[in-house]
Image (cartoon, rainbow, N blue to C red; front, side, top):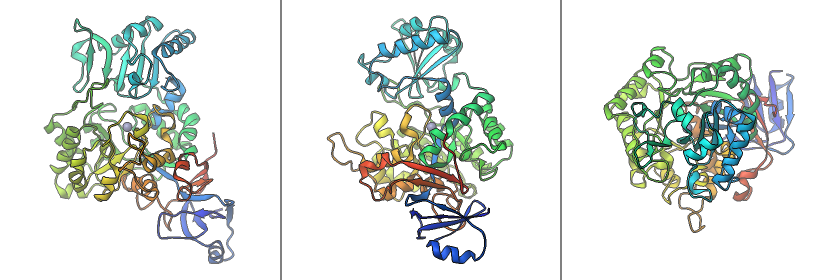
Length: 510
Ligand SMILES: [Zn+2]
C-alpha cells in the first residue's frame, strides 16, 4: 500500500509543520497535520494506518560521521576490554590470556578506552613485555581509542614497525632508553589487517541494527577503510539489507590515492537515497599528541600537499571530511579551503568539513572558523569518554557565532554507548564543568537535537531530504517513548527508542 498514516503520536517536526499525524506516500512525507484533516484529504484512497499509541514521532537521527563497518567488525571480532569495567592492566592481561587459549593463532585486536593509562590502577598502558607474555609468537595489539596502540613483538614485526624506515609522518614511536621502539605507537590503526568483504557483510547484518537503528539512527555517513568495506556496502544495498541510509566517505590514502578515486568521475551524492558516495575522508593530523598525555602537532601533510589535495577534491566536486584535532591542523585545513577558488567551492554539493573542529577549536579561533564556511563537526560524547580540558568543545560559542554544528557519534566501537544520538544530545545539554556546575558550553535541547537532525543532514548536503518532517522529505522517523523536549534533561539519555522507520518501513529489531 503506498499511502501510510502515522497517527496517535506526539509529533515533533523540527519544522513549521504541526499536527498529530504524518501522511507518507512511497516512502516520502506527503503531509503533516491533524489525523482527521489528513484522512479527509485523501478521500476514498486506501491507507495503511500506523497507530503510535501516544509515542513521540520525530525525524530519524542523522549520524554525521561514524565508522559503521569497523564498529560492526569490532563487535564481531575484537576483544572489548574497556575501562571501566576493567580497572587494571593485570585484569586486561588476564582477559587477553584467556582469549589466547581459545584462539591460539592469528591477530588479537583489543579495543579499549581513550586515555587507558589514566583509567587503570597501574596508571600506565600495558607494556610490550606483558603483551608478549600473554601472546607469545602471535600478534596482539591493544588500542586505547583508535589512535594509540601497544603492539607485542610479533605484531610490531608483522606491521614492519621494527623497521625505522616504515614509520610514517605524524606517527609517534615511543622508545626504550636504548632507542629501540617499546611497542607504544600512535597512528598505526590504518596498518592493521582488514576484514574481508564476507566478514564485513556478516558483521553489518548482525550488528548494525543493534548499534545504530536501535538508537533511532536512520541515516549515517560512514568511513570505509578498505575496498572490501565499500564492496560490503554495495552487496548489502543490492540485497536490500542496509537497515538505514548510508553515505560513504572512503579513507584516503588507505582505500586508494585520491587521484584514483577522483578520476572515477563520481561526484558527491552519486548513488541513490539508500547508498550514496559522499566524498573522501582525509586525516590532516592524527592523535594530536604522543598518546600518553603530551599534546603536539602531528600533521600528516605539508601545507602545499594539503592545498593540492583540497584543490583536486574541489575540482572533482567531492566533499572532504578533514580530520583535525590540533589548532595547527584546524588552521591548515581552513587555509587549504581558503586557497581554493570561490567558484569551484560553490559547486560542491556540501561544503568541505573539518571533523572534530567543534571539539578542538581554541576559543579565540571560533570567529575565524565560523566565517570560513567549512562544516564544523562535533562528537559530544567525547566530553564524558575522553579526558578533556575546560575549554574543550565550546558549542555554545560556536552556535552563538552562527555555526550549525554537525553531530557525529564517531563510533568506531571504542565507546559502547557513544553510538546513541540521545546519549550525545544529553551530553551537550547536561555538561558540567570540573566543579559540577553547569558548563558555559551547554546547548539547549532544541539546539542539541538539531545537531543530530537538521544540522547533521545539512552538513552532508541532505538538508532538503532529512532531519525534519515536512512534505517532500523522506519518511524516516525515530519513535520515542518520551519527548526529549519535555522530560527532565537528565533523563534524555535514557529515553527508550521504540522503533525506527526508514522510508516509512519499520526497521526490525535484531
Ligand atoms: Zn572518525
